[in-house]
Amino acid sequence: MIGYTVFKPVKELLEQAIRFIHEGDDYLVVSHVQPDGDAISSTVVIGWLLEKLGKKYTLINEGASPSRLHYLHLSDTIQNYSESKPNRSYKRIIAVDCADFRRMGDVESCFEDGYELLNIDHHPTNDLYGSVNLVFSYAAATVEILYELIEQAGIALDEPAATAIYTGLLTDTGGFRYSNTTPRVMEIASELLKLGVNGHWVADYLLERMTMPQLKLLQLGLSRLTFSEDAKIGWLYIEANDLSATGAAPEDLEGLVNYARNVDGVEVGILFKEMKNGHVKVSLRSAGSADVAVIAQSFGGGGHVRAAGCRLEEPLQQSMEKVVEAVRKALNE
Ligand SMILES: [Mn+2]
Image 1 (cartoon, helix red, strand yellow):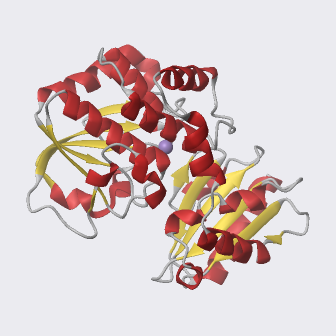
Image 2 (cartoon, helix red, strand yellow):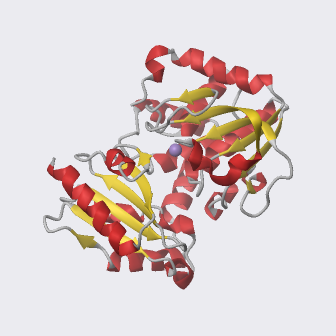
């Protein structure tokens, strides 16, 4: 756990972040590679805030936004760095939902020398790489911190901003089901509903609806589901050409790992995703008895106690053996 908040009261840190936002007038807002619901929501909420304050800003991420999040206000203005690079550099950066500097990917190449960065995040593994760090690991999502920030700044939320915050909360709590669903999360969600957010529509659209390619990918994944002898570890894998074979989008992999973890008796579920370059992306989910953040960190990754990830520069088969073995060891400790 990051002990930073122990030394500085929350309010003081929020004020420091608000000063950072007021001081400049031209910002680059960036989230992590392969952005998820919280990443995109946080990006557009900062965009909304900067717009309110009359600041100039550019929203950018390495990689495309999940198409399902197109309904979010300003989401169509997020640039995809892999497709078009800005022909200028930026002095003031706001990074959201990025546990470490590398998570921003190549976007860092448009940071000016001597740049100043506001780091807003909720990952316990955040290494405080910003000039100002607003990092609260008790927050369920980065948007939860943004809600507190906007409230502290005395700015009234409207429905589009509220819908974005609600979206980030919903996705990072797995539909208000994970252990990070605190009383505070529900209080904030309640306030957002009062502002006109259509909670039923957002939940149905993001969590229930499936595209046909998404279903085909799920079928394929389930057909490969494997368990350890004691059935405490479950894992499945997706090969590099499976996405194109099924027509599924990268974001359709989200949630797949839960099918491995959700089985009675399983302590850790793992999804192995083979990338086009042969490297393997690993998602780990724990039912509670293993700290998967520690396991992910031992492979150079990170995350939370119950949800973490890492990458291995090794073939799929070897990666699976290594990670399953590390999980086995962790469970037997
Ligand atoms: Mn998040």
